[in-house]
Image (cartoon, rainbow, N blue to C red; front, top):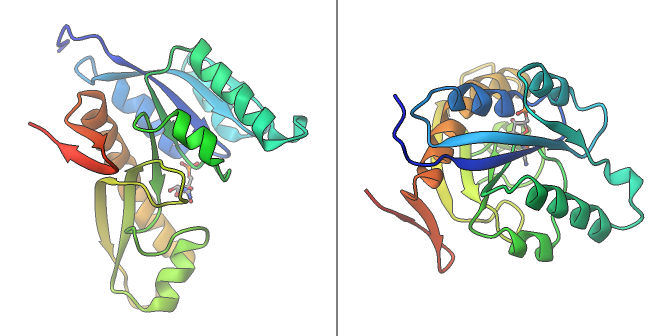
Length: 207
Ligand code: GAR
């Protein structure tokens, strides 16, 4: 059912297959969901998620970082595309670029990311290998506001999954991914409704 409240305009940034992007597109099909996906931007021309988005009738474009001599130039082009799309919220969904502090600051409070670990554990890459190496018995995913520090921003939502005997990085990745999609859709809804917002470097939750 429609709420009559204008939906927040969301841009999704991807680098690959875009299964989280797909989950956000699915969630946004619900008339009562507080956000609409207005554009998808990939930093790679061959990102599989671009086609998935286009097939759903969503505007999708590649802004390949390789076409730009400097990171700042590429980020300026991405920012320009985000402004052109009148994006209220930016969702990083498997966007495998380290962001400059300037870009992170420009979108602070409006940009969120999904990371495949229970932050602050296991920042960076190969999080499932890191979890197996550490011997933790629970693992999971985190959606957080993006700040200048990599995988450091204030947390909006997390979901835990068990680590099972005999798990490999692949089986664990699959189990985590199966909860990422719902977690991301839930976190985006919290931000879009203003029930979760970033204030003074922390997430504040409101009813
Ligand atoms: C997801 O597991 C996401 O959490 C991870 O990349 C994968 C993208 O999959 N993101 C990061 O590692 C960011 N540091 P998807 O393209 O199918 O959504």
